[in-house]
View 1 (cartoon, protein in one colour):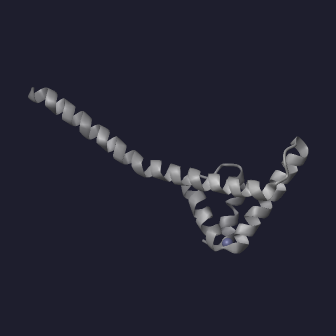
View 2 (tube, rainbow, N blue to C red; view 1 turned 90 degrees about the vertical axis):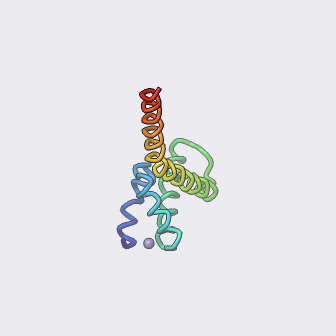
View 3 (cartoon, rainbow, N blue to C red; view 1 turned 45 degrees about the vertical axis):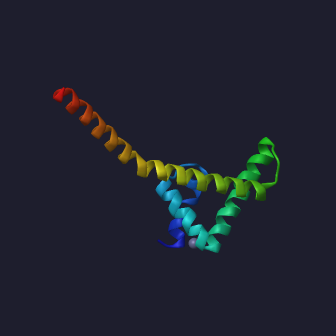
Amino acid sequence: MECRDYRKYFRPFWDGELDHVERRALLQHIDSCKACAEELKVQYMLREGMRRLEYGGTLDLVTDYGKVMEEARHRTSVERAAYIMLPLIALSAIVISFLIILGGIVI
Ligand SMILES: [Zn+2]
């Protein structure tokens, strides 16, 4: 994917509409692409700055941007871990159920 493909994710990213796969791809891209990282940050400053001017709140947007991005990275890693673990948990439940049923038949 190219920068313009990732930039289509920016608005959905700020609106919380990306799934963990799309969010992870975007976060990995901005780690290696300074231009997109800067553009994403500018979008945050504009959106959040306008919102806070209208509704109030501190204007320490640089600090808040760091916190928001840290939360996005954390949420993405948690959702990814759950996505990977869910089939294993389901499989374990099936195996345990099978063993319980089998144990009931044997006894
Ligand atoms: Zn880029």
